[in-house]
Image 1: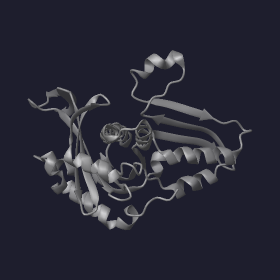
Image 2: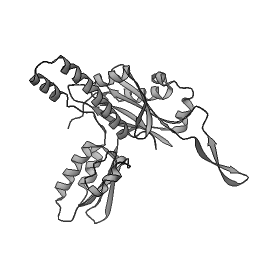
Image 3: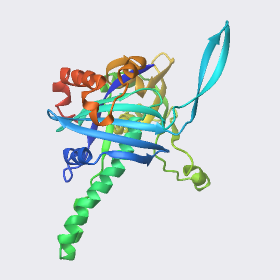
Image 4: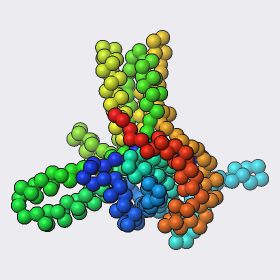
Length: 304
């Protein structure tokens, strides 16, 4: 299984800068926080102008299934997880303290960037509110209190760094766009009959179809703006080239991947790893090396 280092960007407003929020997480690790149906642990450290982090997701599964070959026949066996243990998944990240650009390590079924982003958004809102409340306690005039409340309206945002030039070149080669399909990890169901589903579903898929009369330039422009937000778990665009042949563009195929590793290689190096010491782990050092090799890229803000 491949483990990839994706380019990412974290953003907050000017009132509560990203560094202030991450400093808060350095001093207040997230431990056993229930989010998205699983317990999450997040450890953050600061070093040499960047923040590094480890995200651990535990799953309350007491048994797992393995496939074995015995005497030329395939056999399925179940095994118990060790006593006082839980299955765990891991994700490391590095972000530049000034630009918020960096790396997020991900593999299949581990914590998606969107999941971490929404969790950080919630924690950021709680942290921002606590700062706001302290200022409100010191304020005496109602107009001052109103100004303080309006001041703290920033949110936490994130996105993958896409190879925009590749995606846009592919869009330009389209003679017609038929549809744009995407899946998001946040729910906003407007149809009343679907409302009961929103309480049980963890994600929702939407599809936008375009007829032949739709202006190509307008559709392409709208899709480029949508992709710029990049809050999708998955996104697919279907269209036709100038010869009438169907073309499909997958957003995940156009993400910046800075390095790839084999899962087994990393797992072997993580034996007896203490989360609070993650910054000195073998894999974190590999990520630090990749980050430093591309430092000019990560230290330069993205231009809209």
